[in-house]
Image (cartoon, rainbow, N blue to C red; front, side):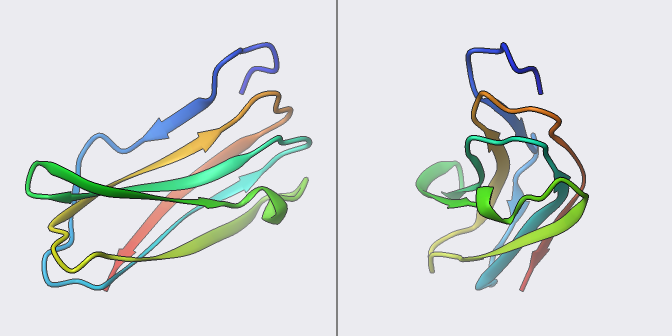
Length: 106
């Protein structure tokens, strides 16, 4: 992530994840950073093709200078048929890197 970049960096899964008949989503990355302003996991909820909501969970305080997995739990709305997940990183941020995106749907 570039320190001088004036906009948030966003990493989004292009494909939606099927959540029909599911109740809970666990979403995370293995991530590290030297300095972060704000980092959030964002889940957008869909009923077929219509957006029915969005939930953000800030993970800034959980990020350390060393790599560690961070997972957050999202309760799915009853009429949710799919979700799209993304990672939002506000600037300025230094030394941030992440890998191993992970999603479990129960």
